[in-house]
Image 1 (cartoon, rainbow, N blue to C red):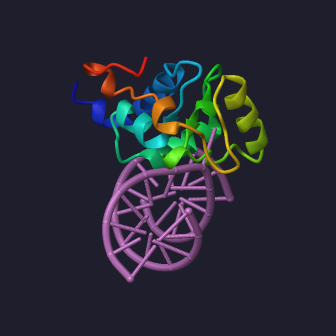
Image 2 (image 1 turned 135 degrees about the vertical axis):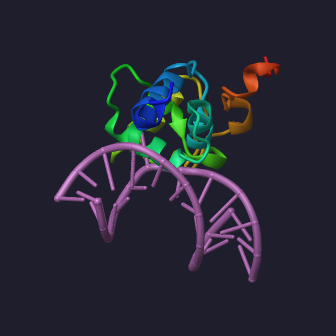
Image 3 (image 1 turned 90 degrees about the horizontal axis):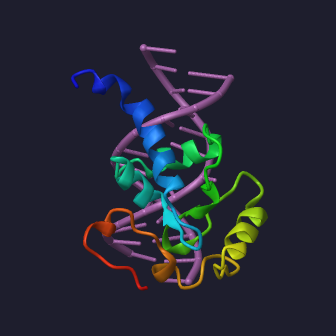
Length: 117
DNA sequence: CTGCTGACTGGTA
DNA sequence: GTACCAGCCAGCA
């Protein structure tokens, strides 16, 4: 357990991917939430970098959006991101997701909370 | 190893 | 709601 210090970066990346994979369809999470769930609430900046490279396949990186329900980016295929989110039942506006607070998936809140439904 | 960039966030004006 | 500044972390040249 002492060498963890050397694997944090690698672990963090894997952790982020694991969290993103846990995001259920029809739900979305912000970079901050994913980073916090990964163990680095201040690493949302890195989360974006990880999403961009997407080292692992089968990762719904399109479910990861910016704060305030903004889409953020999708490597130049932002249009695709909107389509994917809308395909999952999300209401995506011109600049941000509709009813974002309700669609927001909170991995850290799942301790004792209950979602809206 | 050093420096810049980026799929970002929060606070203040 | 919009605009500007400062902070944080990982990837690439």
